[in-house]
Length: 148
View (cartoon, rainbow, N blue to C red):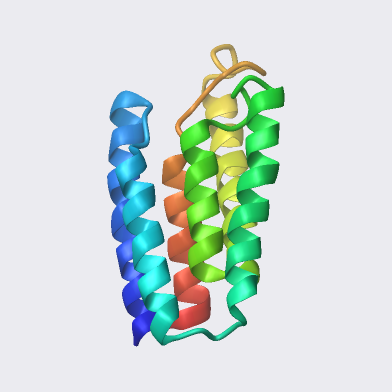
């Protein structure tokens, strides 16, 4: 029951992050902080995995993606997306995080392929797009696949 509630809170936060990412290309830190607080509270009452699985997943995901963002000058992944992935790793643990990570990237690749086919001359290597919607879709996909 707590796990379902945590997913619903995370999905709600990701909807808000998607709106701000699409509208302003910005993901507010308050979304991440609320998600972390919800995750910590949920994990105080229910932990399907050892506590260190959640902490390590969140920290390692954040650290690796942060290094990628710094090295690429945020051209491959933005700072807000890095924080969202770190929050999801902390909240859900390794296996759900991996499923969210790969499914969100696969959905983004399919979207870009379709956009490239439709507007082939407007999409190139340096084309940037909001990624929060794909993180949201990956999280919903993971929730439906693993919890329903």
